[in-house]
Image 1 (tube, one colour):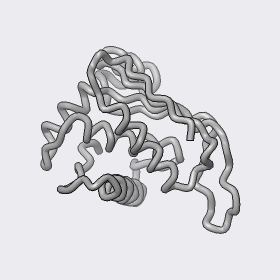
Image 2 (cartoon, rainbow, N blue to C red):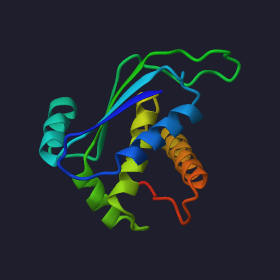
Image 3 (cartoon, one colour):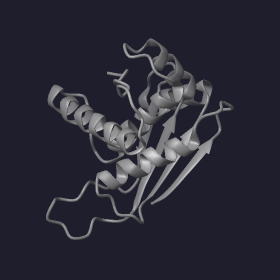
Image 4 (cartoon, one colour):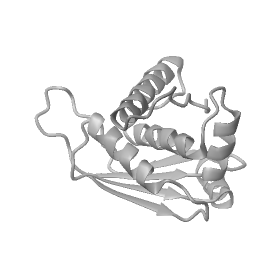
Length: 165
């Protein structure tokens, strides 16, 4: 997997964990190992500009996804998953920090960024959470991926619950 993490935020983040959780999520979703993904970490001002430009919504948000080749997880009987450019995930550590602090199961900014990375990957793969059934599917898959990644790394304790709707 070719994954680039570019921190333009001025905030120190665990870039290796973002890379690792993205790689784990893509492998778990059976995305071709030669596919490419870019993760950009930006400050609140840059995120707000993107949020206004692309969603016509005010203020910064936590994560945005910009798909390129619209790759989807392969059907179980596919021998070879398609290869391509997944797209970009943009993360905002300032929003992630506040969400982690405000969450029912308080957690760190880096834990929130890991959750948001998986969330962004799933959006790139076509998952959404507008409808209740879509939300249940996406958030269930997101929790399974985070739990699997944390277990593989030997991280104990509850996984961060989604703090976005």
